[in-house]
Length: 177
Image (cartoon, rainbow, N blue to C red; front, side, top):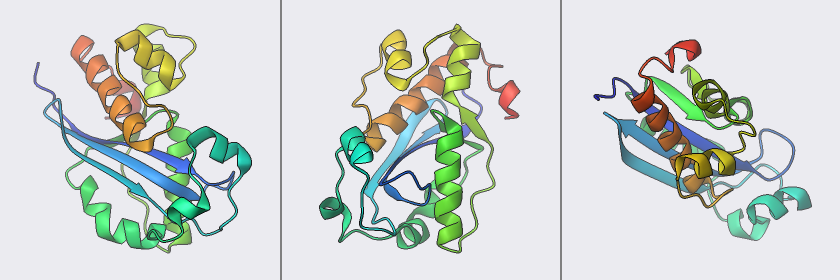
């Protein structure tokens, strides 16, 4: 089956509970049903204090990112990664959309005007899955995952969309794409 859309799966890790605190991002670009490009970057968040809870989730500390570009510099250098994309995909898209929006606002940059496909909702609609945490969906589909590594999470999200579209080419219709 020919995949009719180009999209970018995106995953952020944050330093604290504030949505402008991206400390890592993973991107996976899909064209014609294949991952054609990947990007992973550590990002210096606006504050040096990392929440112990967040560090426990992803293992990233201030010492890992203190010399990395902030979001503004990262985005200016890499926003072209989204060129040609019809939509963005994320697992629990509300979170990643909020992080992207908050980071763009903090950096005085326009947020991308692309629709989001949420792979949590997609997994529920397509396969009736519960629970729909990323490891659960990956296990169901037989996908490898290094959970809370932004690159691995983004690639898994890209593959979830691919699997759903192969089974049901109209599965993205509820998302307006």
